[in-house]
Length: 168
View (spheres, rainbow, N blue to C red):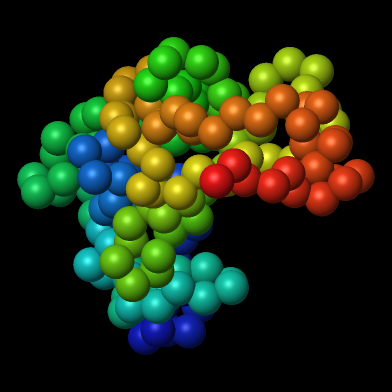
């Protein structure tokens, strides 16, 4: 949406994500007038609204070849959606279905993932915080293993009788 003209100038298609720091550097956008796929750098976004991205004017969008500062990030074409999530011990957790970012810094803060197999049908999406991420690769996001393991029978017993007394 152009603040100058008050009308739409394009459609944001997908974010341009820097895999080195999980920061949104801009968006691929479809120019409303020419139909070309252009780049909208994050520096040109004046406001994020429920209706979309607000820019000063149509000229905020640029040809990808002219984006020298973003050339490497654009050439990587890193996509989070569908990326596999595994633990440090190589246990597959699921695939990324969505993400949340901080609109002020544009850093991705949370990843939402769907579990694998039949368990995914009955379970909610997994939420992975930025602090849990250990490594980002072309094929997967590696997250910290959780060292907490409580057997199912111990959980059931604790609910029925309360927590067990700790040894002194």
